Amino acid sequence: MASAPTPKYNSHSLENESIKRTPRDGINRELSEAVPRLPGETRITDKEVIYICPFNGPIKGRVYITNYRLYLRSLETVCKHCRGSEESRCVLCGSGDSALILDVPLGVISRIEKMGGATSRGENSYGLDITCKDMRNLRFALKQEGHSRRDMFEILTRYAFPLAHSLPLFAFLNEEKFNVDGWTVYNPVEEYRRQGLPNHDWRVTFINKCYELCDTYPALLVVPYRASDDDLRRVATFRSRNRIPVLSWIHPENKTVIVRCSQPLVGMSGKRNKDDEKYLDVIRETNRQISKLTIYDARPNVNAVANKATGGGYESDDAYHNAELFFLDIHNIHVMRESLKKVKDIVYPNVEESHWLSSLESTHWLEHIKLVLTGAIQVADKVSSGKSSVLVHCSDGWDRTAQLTSLAMLMLDSFYRSIEGFEILVQKEWISFGHKFASRIGHGDKNHADADRSPIFLQFIDCVWQMSKQFPTAFEFNEQFLITILDHLYSCRFGTFLYNCESARERQKVTERTVSLWSLINSNKEKFKNPFYTKEINRVLYPVASMRHLELWVNYYIRWNPRIKQQQPNPVEQRYMELLALRDEYIKRLEELQINNSAKISDPPTSPASPSQMMPHVQTHF
Image (cartoon, rainbow, N blue to C red; front, side):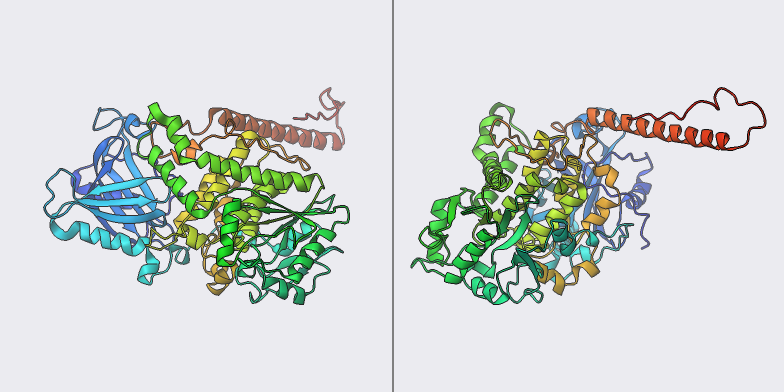
């Protein structure tokens, strides 16, 4: 079947589209042609269903399943009151002319369950329950005859969880073309050069070019100049997963650094490693103005002590004389997973107004956000003040460590607050340094109860959003930029977040076989720009990490509830963008007038000059 023209993709499911009133026998063909499809996306099947909408009850529609998405379009129209659109005529109240649209990438699906049995007699009690990773659930009722539920269940399971069926993720089938190659955004050599590296204290090493030193680290590392590659190999034996301390960021003026790694393998017996102790001293001595190295262990103290039982631990005062150790009390992946589940319980499908504040407090989600931000502020302040270089680790150095280093760098370095800079920050601190995206998100994996699942990256993006609320002019990107990143964290449309580490992506040739998310974003940057952005090169941001200043990100967590949905776009932002467009138009007209005026003056006059020709050029500054 030939593909329909590919319409512009919208990461939001609830779109306003109208459906012509046509005879019933023509509706299916019309709807089929209206289903958006990407290059490489193929239609698998379609079925008539009843969507059990949590906001306005059963709605008859047709579901189309492709190898990328589940797309439902209602056969009935639903008004703005019932679906949050701007248009009206509804089967329930008679207003509007707008179909309900659900556009769900299959990668977003976490679990598919059958509801009801052969003996079910209740209305709409037989069908499928679908749990999603993006804070919503879907329920479809199907006819009991004709194996319609079985067929839909098997097809959805096959394409939502392709790894369990020896199928490729959609990212490897996606044939989209963009005018910008997002894979070229991050070049580690160029990024370290931007930071002024290498220098006489720090060197670039390719000891890990074949991922033999550490299979979860990138090929290129920056280490102290005085540390040989043999030193690095000895240190690796004493750090969890061989994740040795390496440089993430250097202050351009005071030369203090942020270094990241994993926990030392101290164990119950309190083992020591002279090479590791000496190596941390060498890191401290790269800045001759400081007397101590500050170590931030992201874990609660009790957890760090407990890790000794499994061979891990932390740096003791006895072994590391020139270091100060602080615990940041950020909880582990399991606590964060349960906290987000509680958030989902209170925001979907309904928000209970009468107990909202106590319900939100019971999730502890904002408390966790506060602790992550507080830790990052401590790291940033220590480095910005020049008081000390900082080493950050948690257990393995790929979850809480990435949160802390990237947020601290965002506070310290205004480059990372640009669109391109933020993409580089994510590529560097999260993707190249081995945050386990595949394990934490479960791309294409049917094991929804996997204990490795956790919203660590979502938590980071939430922290960035909190900062953008407190500093509305400091970030080049807008809220839609952050939401788009999160949508495609799950979608499997792009290769950006696939696999757990750089070595796995190299083996799978991800940059050759898939499209980068940054290609989509950088091909349409205007959509993701903050109109209030003011570039300030040396400004350090210190957000207020107080519960009084933190808030739930409604436009992300509660966006599926049409009755809570905020105005889109923001009217103030919209008006500001209109004024900027007017300014640009006036500047363009003025430049054209000046060019025309210059041309007239440069021509030999054939008659006495008119007063307008004698006027000087006008320059207007906006």
